Length: 185
Image (tube, rainbow, N blue to C red; front, side):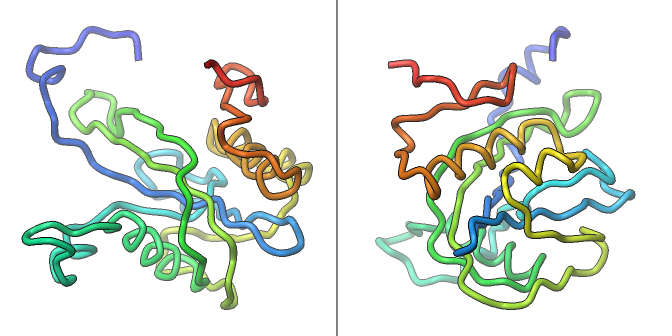
C-alpha cells in the first residue's frame, strides 16, 4: 500500500490476528479451499484453511502462569482448521507472517501468522459458507488454481521442508516471484 496514512492509523497497535495452516498429508499433498464469493477480502480465490484468533481460544483455558496463556495461537489454529474443514492436524509449526489492510480505507490492519502442520485425520467437510470447495493438491497442481497472491510461495516453502528435508532457516520467501531464494543472513 503506497498511500499516506493518518498519524492515528500509523500509531494503531490493534490488529486483527489471522492464523493459516499449510496442511500436508503423507502423500505430499496440500489442503486448499476456495473462499466464498461473499468474503470481504479475496472472494472466490483458493487459499489454505485458517481464520481469526478469538479471545475465547485462550481466556477460558487454564493459566500457564498467573494470567498468562501459552500456545494460544496454536490452539486457535487447531480450532479454526477443525471448524472450517473438519480435519485434525498435529501441532502447527511457524512458517512466516504477512501484514495487510483488510479494507480500502486502511482502518482494519491484519497480521496473518502462517503455519504448517501435518494432517492427522478426518474427512474434509466445509463449514457454513466460509469456503465452497476443497482439494488436496501437490505443489505442481497448486499452480493450476486461482490462489490468493502469496499462497503458492508458502506451499512451495512447505514442500521444500517436508519433501526435500530443508529447514526453515535454509529457505525464505520471495514475494516478487513466489519462488524460493537463498535466505538473507
